[in-house]
Length: 75
Image 1 (cartoon, helix red, strand yellow):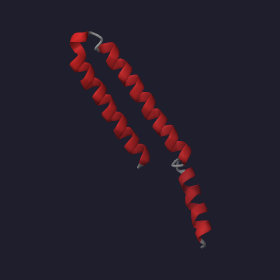
Image 2 (cartoon, helix red, strand yellow):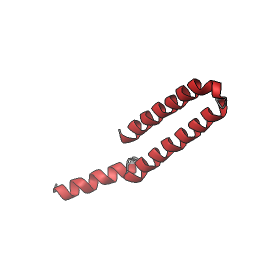
Image 3 (cartoon, rainbow, N blue to C red):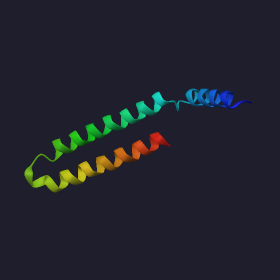
Image 4 (cartoon, rainbow, N blue to C red):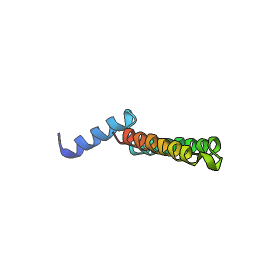
């Protein structure tokens, strides 16, 4: 099989199993949406100035989850 056909077949397999560029972009978009939602929830839960430390922890947790989600999209 020529290299051209190997690339074509490989690309088709990726698309069939949902690993195409569009799928990865959708995954990353979902990660971003989840992060934004989580960060907003943090801001609503910890809106008192006395809760600043808890707000930072909550947002840091959301950011860590976002980064893990992005890693999963890429793998």
